[in-house]
Image (tube, rainbow, N blue to C red):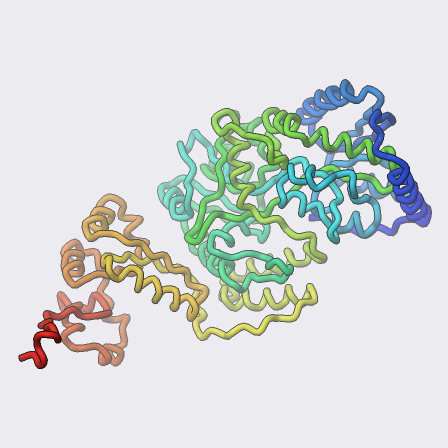
Length: 543
């Protein structure tokens, strides 16, 4: 994330106004130039390998457009390029075309350093790109760039240490328990990917912060539990985690896909890439970042038109496929087809990008990340309960954005966590689901997973996959199932966990049915009796 303030010169503003006036006059006098010519100054920060591929693509562009001369300037880092662009633009200089990060857009627009694409990128042309990538380059309803590629967090794994990537959070913990080290970033941005897996998000459609509407508190509790395992490394020092991964000390690493080239250079064929594990509610949702081409506000209209022509060429399906194949860029162009067998890494990245969350270009996004990160740290360090921290930070962030807090019904249940329930009684499955839904309205921060299973399947699971059985919290079944599970020593004696006064509300016979070995092994839900049925058409009063 970047935050900066620029005060454009008066000369820049005059040039900006004059340039757009000329463009409007030209647009009214005819169409676009069918024989484009001129010079484009193009700035980028791609590394040597990327630059080599880019130069080859630019050569193709030159063959198609021989009257357009493209001059490139390469920078050592994105920050250096951004600083140079700001300084040059303030003096009326700089490039016509620039590769930018979506996080730069709000400040560049506010400083009037880049111009919108206007009618030079039609709705039909915009339909070729990922909507999330277009939105990332949009400010105040106007598109300020053409997306080239996207980045997001993915799961890297070392094939020398493991032969497959876990697809669920439970499987990830199983890997950690088996001694295969899992490393994750603990800061807010790096760790946010699990919030959606528990049903939560950061913003609503109206850009209101909704961290308190489920998911975030559950994810923080999961992180707290995971960090206690010897096989899990949770640290804010991403460089350290990445170094240990490259040294072969870590089997799994959650990291940004922008480092994929460095990973390949270090590990070669031993590197695996996969989407992040899903959670109890759905797919992981890391933040989505977009890299795209933006256009300097000081460029003459003809230069801007040529720059947009070049940007369209660099992001068309053919060139995007080249960038994906040669330098592992995940294309923003929807027409690119990635073969998972030939390009497994880019395919995995694109799979993750489809469920990633674009960060809206809202004001104070850096401050939002800082405040949310502080709250997350307090929870992970045990300073504040997760439910309290999430409620407080949501109010604080909405106040920062000038959004009044919503009047929500206060729940007396402040518990956070998951409940895994196995239903052995088929007839009760649908009705019990209604009860769990009602429970969710009382305790919204508890996620309930319900699964139907036969008694034999459950007993087999306990024998073949004891770790999976140990994660089951509650079993709904008949008395015969209780007896069978007791024989296998699979049930917990809850005598000390239940207030004896509460047992008075149940029929004594029902309580007796869940007692065994001088202990209490269940709570009765209903009873079945042998009854006499009669036909009222034939019998007026049964005997």
